[in-house]
Length: 140
Ligand code: CMP
Image (spheres, protein in one colour):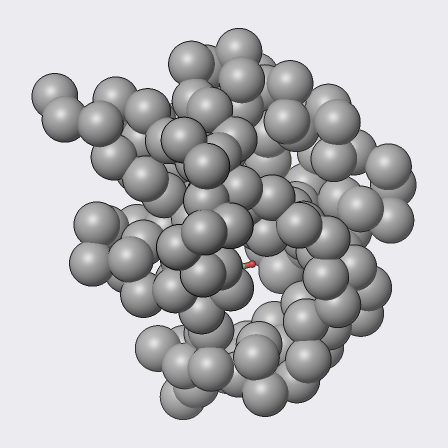
């Protein structure tokens, strides 16, 4: 399996409750390396662009509101099979359906305040990484 990169966001519900370190520890324990990381306040246009694929879904307005409600930590994670592996670390989008031991089972408050995001494919990962990081900010 090739070394991949995936994009991660530690969401406002996680930063608000001081959970960045706890989630980073789970990321690193899973064998993923944090090769870029910064704490930012997402603007409304940034959130709308980032989640444009969901723009016609009934939860879009709530999603944009929750993602702009406080600081997020945006990250690039690197490792073998990183995209699938990180989604395993996160668990199901809906915390009620997430497996024990996953980030969302442990920490998520609801489906929209679900503590963290991970890319769902190599194509999406490349687009998402480019939205927040320039090449020289990623140090593998
Ligand atoms: P995320 O992995 O960031 O990708 C899209 C987000 O939409 C998802 O996590 C959830 O936080 C959010 N969301 C809110 N409501 C729903 C819903 N009903 N179905 C799927 N995603 C939802």
